[in-house]
Length: 217
Image (cartoon, rainbow, N blue to C red; front, side, top):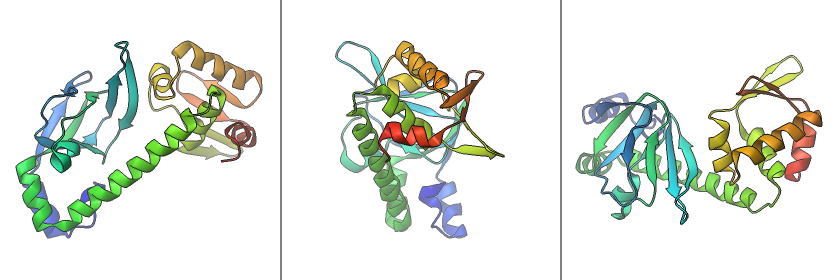
């Protein structure tokens, strides 16, 4: 896990003794907005959705956390209660640390604090990048930017990506609706920019045109 990577083997063993392996099931709510959170939860397996409710009562997806990411740091660092919900997207496992144990670990092993700061800095950079993309009124540009940032595999001349979550969640992340997102994907297919395979796999047929949609990045 990235926040413990800089520690020695002995220090990692000391940290492991404080960890509580915790299984979660798809749909489990880890905490709700406004609830007290007394532990740091590091994702070991699975994915956690972070979302907020709009004034109209609709859920808005903020980010998806995967293995190595963590939640519950806000209360530990600032004392503020969360303004978001954390929900398991599928069955998985967490490594959980009580905040009082975490305080001692950070005091004894400053590298943990530095790892947390590094991870939070990267998360802030990603959030700023997404906010800049959301400032565009053009969903095609936001979608192109999202597709280009996904991990890809190359098979000869073909570059393939896999959507990491359902299209309705991607639509929420991009500030759109599932219907509008489907129309944007269909436009890209008709234009020869991408090819769809099933519900998750996409071939990037013309990365230059995707870059042009984003504005060259």
